[in-house]
Structure formats: structure tokens, C-alpha cells
Length: 242
Image (cartoon, rainbow, N blue to C red; front, side, top):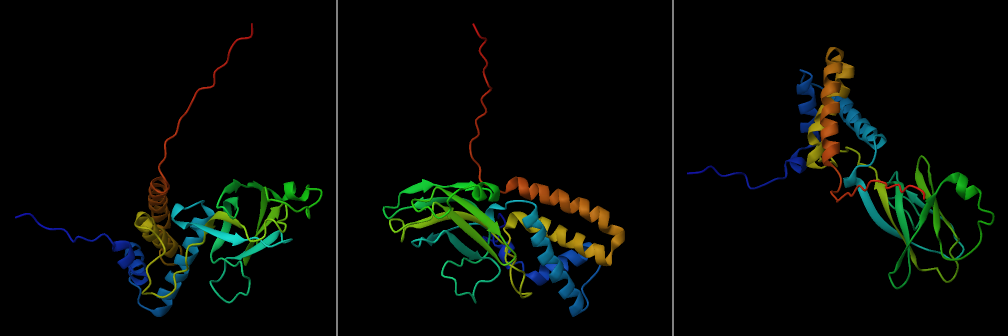
């Protein structure tokens, strides 16, 4: 008689923060014996998630949302440091950067917007001109992200939307009973990364080998992340002049 399987595939969600910490400590040959050691590991795990943000886009942390346009208002604020405690009507939790945006009218027809740099926005001669927005400029501050539109929405555009995709911050670790805000593909490199960070503090003789293992695990997870699509490469053809 054939053996049965568990019938579940939820290990990443049942793998709590305290188990992640225990796994990482075991990899450096130790056991967390005190509350301070657990607290230290939780802090290191939060730092690890911030390091991942610096390494580039992770597709599970891409969100989609909309903001309602207001007559004569070109700048809109999206807070990223907290999920509550703000009076701004456009506040969207976790926004770290805006990837792409469209202007969406009342008929749900989208018109692509072009993302421009600070220098390009500064070079615009009349930033108060009103009309249908065609460009946007993003500023990233410590506690918020703002998006500035050009042209400034007028009365005709008021009530319509800017729909956008954005990079969302990975949730903080929080309670030890929480699950990590990480898909199963990144669980191996999360454990390896935390072990590497802990080794810097508690097992420096193993730091180099654990860093190599972490980087290897991270590259495999990063290669698996993303959305598969077809790519077509066409060689450039040159014709001799007659």
C-alpha cells in the first residue's frame, strides 16, 4: 500500500518567527537561551528584510491601488511607515516607490503616464497648468512617498483616478508567533540570511561560510521570483547603401 502525503503545502505560513530564529541559531551551533538573544535575532531579521529591499524588486511585494484626483491639486501623499494614525485621505500603507501609473477616467479607460525625474520636473516652465495628467514625479522621504502630477488635474479631471503599481515594504516581524511576510521560495534564504547575521554577532569564525551559503540561496530564490513571459530577440539588420 502506497504511503500518503500530508495533503498540505502551507509550511511557509505555519513556520513562525520563533521557529525561524531557532533554525538560524542551530545553523551557527547555538540555541537561543535568553529573551535578549531572541530579541537580538528578531532585530536582525527585520534588518535582513530591509537589506532585501535594497537588492531590488521582489514581485510578491508589488501592490496596486488608486488615488482620487482633486481639482487644482498636483501632489498626493502616500505614507509608508504606518497603517493607521494618519488623517491624509490618500494614505496607502507600505508604499516604498511607484513603478508605473495610468490616468483612469470615469469610463474606466486608461491613459499611460510617463515617470520623470526631479530634474525633468524642475525644468517644466509652468507647473500649475491644468489639464489631463501625462507625467508624474515621485519623491521618497523617510516617512512617506509623494507623487506629483503634470499637468495639474482641473475640474474636468476631478473625481477621476490615478491607478498605479507600487513597491510595498515587507511587513515587520512583530510577535514571535507571527508568520514571516515572505513566500515559500524565500524561506531557505531567509533562514540562511538570519544565520549569517547572527554569526556576525555570536559566531564570527563561521561568518564567511554562512555568507557564501546565504548569497547562493538568495540568488536561487531571486532567479525563481518574478513572472514568466515570452521574450523575442531580433538581430539588427543593416543594409548597405547603394
